[in-house]
Length: 209
Image (cartoon, rainbow, N blue to C red; front, side, top):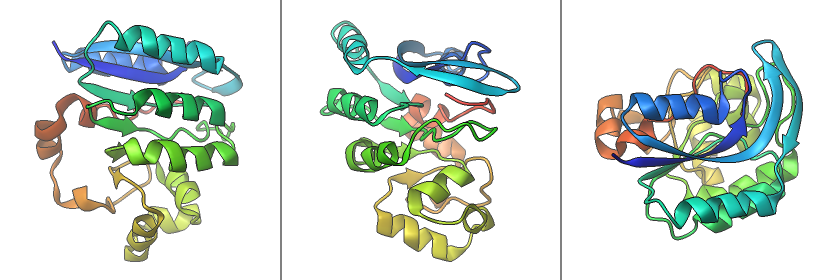
């Protein structure tokens, strides 16, 4: 059984975050390994608080998992702080496994989950390690410096901005009609055939994390 390393925040309602990713991994016949980056206070109505885990604790979790288990794929979700982005990136360098990054920037109701300096850290530290990026439309807009309505429209000019920004490959997220990436001509079946578990671990319709 292949393993998926899931690095994300905890959702007590289990509609998002590492709980949701763990369900997906199990349904796909994989063994999910989990590293908790933040404890959220949320339910289906929204997020009311986020408590990031100390960077040294996240680092220790990653060391513990990687020292004992082989990792076939990685799914990264909410990282909450620039320090956590850097710690996770540092610990994943050199890992020979496809990394799926779901850049969780805000909850569905607008509660902020990563500040501007955290977004910069994502671009500088994690993007170079990422094979597949799975933002929704508002997240893609913030990452590329666009208005959300421009990204939602799926215009060809957006693809040029994404390429200029040096973003990794994009896959469909909420609010997209087309994927602007080298993957746009690949079918979902082909993606699953190439990267199986990693390509399948995109965000479910949860609130955050």
